[in-house]
Image (cartoon, rainbow, N blue to C red; front, side, top):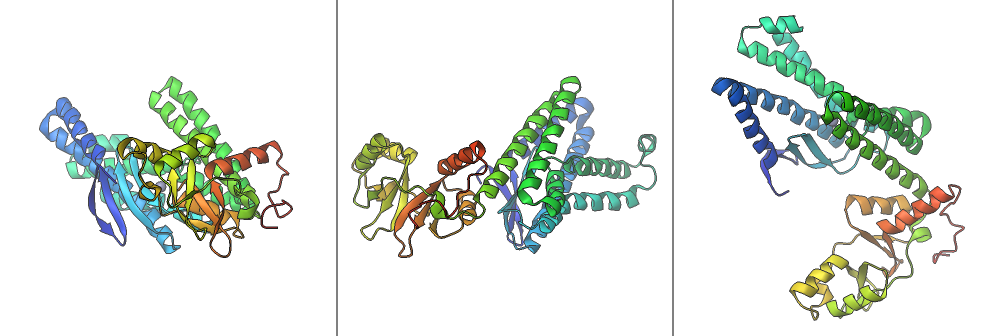
Amino acid sequence: MRWSLTLGSLGGTVIRIHVTFLLFLIWLWAIFYRQGGTEAAWQGTAFIVLVFLGVLLHELGHVYAARYFGVPTRDVTLWPFGGIASMERMPEKPSEELIVAIAGPLVNVAIVAVLALFVGPRLDAEGLAQIESPAVSMAAKVLWANVVLVAFNLIPAFPMDGGRVLRALLAVRMGNARATEVAASIGQAFAVIFGVLGIFYNPMLIVIAVFIFLAASGEAANAQLRAVAQGALVSDVMITAFQSLPTSATVNDAVDALIRTTQTEFPIVDGAGRLRGVLMRDAMVKALKDQGPDTPVLDVMVTDIPAVSARAKLDTALRSLTEKRRPVVGVTDPDGRLIGLLTLENLGEMMMVHSARPETRFGPWHPGPSS
Ligand SMILES: [Zn+2]
């Protein structure tokens, strides 16, 4: 990732700090300095660094739990608003998701326990004021910060860990899709409460509310998509009427096809009917401008397009589409020839059909090309 510094790597997971986080620290140092001089500036900054150490360890809790269930994590990046672990996916089993989700907050609980031993019984506000040793008072402040981290993360709303814990607990009783729906509704109710509180108390809460609301909607849509996809085959929903381009085509040919069709991405197919790559509209227009109309499409196409068999289950194909972050998946017959495409737009249409008529099954009754 650009604009981030690598701190090191732990068992295959790279730890990074985003540049904005360093700027954030410098900015805070300056604010503390204006309020209380050099000593206050260093103490305040040290406090923030220690809190973010708790955030980093929290993320590593998730990372190690996920790794235990066979899900790798490429990197953890610290941003001013928190840490983000780029986990490839969540484990599908509710019990495993529960453990991965709870592992983060548990790390903060452990930090609280260790610091409590150090700080001793003077944990209330009055006791805090009486603490004379700066080391003890710093430990007490970091302890409280970790208590807040646990409480915030366990709010039962996506994308907080509490949302995932709630979903996993519900999923044991009612299945993944329904559990996500219920968890998302609870999360949205929390978002509304936050929004209302934000109007009266703190505008920052409104920002958090919008964030939670959108995340909940995203999760709900995702789960619905997976539920609809269950039982369907790729051949039931793939696009079969599309225009492809030969390997000898130029950008000019591609632009021609772009204008004549409603497609925005064009598969490049060789003489044997195999998918060689996909040319996206943006790349096409950029090549037209920078390299000229005679540029071969082979030079500007995206090559690592995932391919699935027409007989594959649709949810497997969905995973290729979302995990590899490609806008299109090629569908092939047993001989490896391209016979269809799956795109996000295509799946969006499937969702529209489903919400208009939920009993619609994209199942084998469909007179698809596979029959
Ligand atoms: Zn977490």
